Length: 167
Image (cartoon, rainbow, N blue to C red):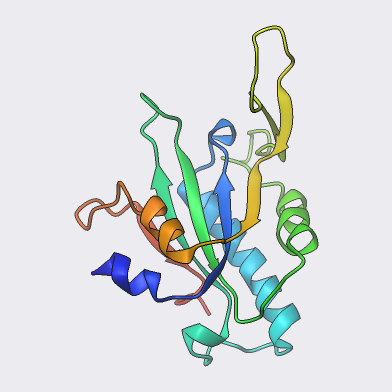
């Protein structure tokens, strides 16, 4: 039922959070709330948008994947946009780097760039530097929703919505 409901939603962007960052769910939620607030303020042109219906404001569906045994814990987000295109570098990646999120007060901030094995990596190659958030435009919403919710069940709540009930 949830999959069919989300497949009808017009998600425009997909955001993947790399597992090398080891980001906690509450830190990701706080960061995305701040980024979504900036998106709503910039593209909707108003300061108070809490009374808008969900189809008229920015929000994200987030799903946690991985268990730190077989796969590292990482997140998939589907971003709902009421506008056709956004400047995702200036609106998502740069605000993420400015937030400097931490696990606690004494910890180092989460990285902005992580090292990973690139496509066709051989052991003698160096690791590639990639941004912690990978943002790309959704080509097929139905396939993206199905992929993001493949391991989700209603009993364990590893999926949550960011940006609808906070405003």
